[in-house]
Length: 294
Image (cartoon, rainbow, N blue to C red; front, side):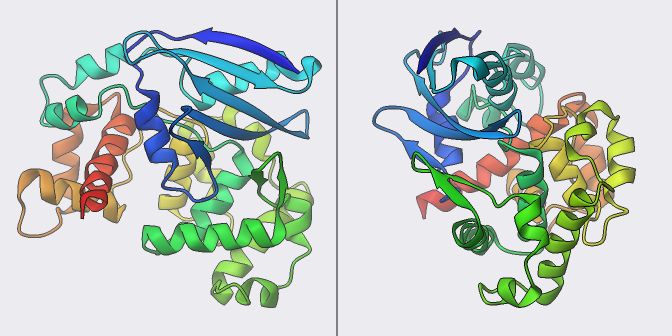
């Protein structure tokens, strides 16, 4: 067992990070103790890392605990990227001070983009979430993971590509996958197992190269690829204009009678670059909060 203290440059509001993580029923979040269990693969070995916040928004401090001392350096490196501890948020916050998103950024100040814990599981989750409302998307993902995945120290790991590649469409249909969605998830996994897609190599490519690679795979379109770029790799300048949540958030923000057009969204977002990913996150957060208050 090892323990490490990590200090991060503020602002960084881990309580708001936990709040958003808790929307996913697979996340093991403890609000009272300000902790989350993080299932990671380090050198292809599954391990669970405990992350606890002991600081505040202006002076963020975290206590990290893991099992294998040998894996500690790589675990810490991965955690810093997952929780966006490697790049201060002050510049992002300042960028939006004079924008139309100022009030949203003030309300959610210090909320970081938190990545999915594993590249493969991120793509699978994006495929499952396609064209579903968020509540059922989480339910379907939870069924998939708890039926075919496994648990260590109370944290859930998605099934591996090798496991999923062996599944039959009927097995996923039994937990309410559509036939097409089942084929997509199994097909993706087979592409990985057969060496046609190296998910661990994707982070070495440009946004456009990744987009071109992923949309060749059956069941992956632009929305799924953009969400992987944002929540899998943490690329900073993604604005999925086809996303219904972002459309609804903009409709609410500007008091529009209907959802904005692609052209209108392009116009709104011009001044938000090069942090479009944060504009996307905070717009999503603005309507998630509204839903929670109902």
